[in-house]
Image (cartoon, rainbow, N blue to C red):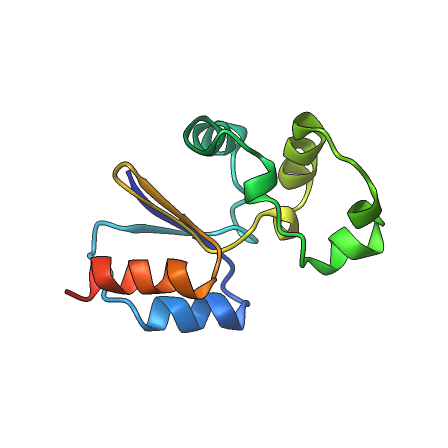
Amino acid sequence: MKKVFYLSTCDTCKRILGKLSLPEDVVLQDIKKQHISEENLEWLYKHTRSYEILLNKRAKKYTEEGLKDENLSEEEIKSYILSHYTFLKRPIFIIEDKIFIGNDKHTVDALKSLFNE
């Protein structure tokens, strides 16, 4: 699988995508226009063993709903991610058997070395 879950209105996602020379066979999925499916989310869980890793704790909605003060179960986190696109950390790159989650420097550097060789 070669897929990127991103948000087209997110400046960070646009900046990261702009730095990469993605092959044409990479599928870009704007999670605002096409929410992540339960099947895709479960595939990510199977490979990460954690919904919490996939949760965007910097989302405005996360703070507004007071979730930072909650001790959420994996199933509750899954439910939140499926309920609204902002709960999914982004971008998420799936390239064959590798998954790159988020926008930290280490992740972006790894993506650059993978796509800009």
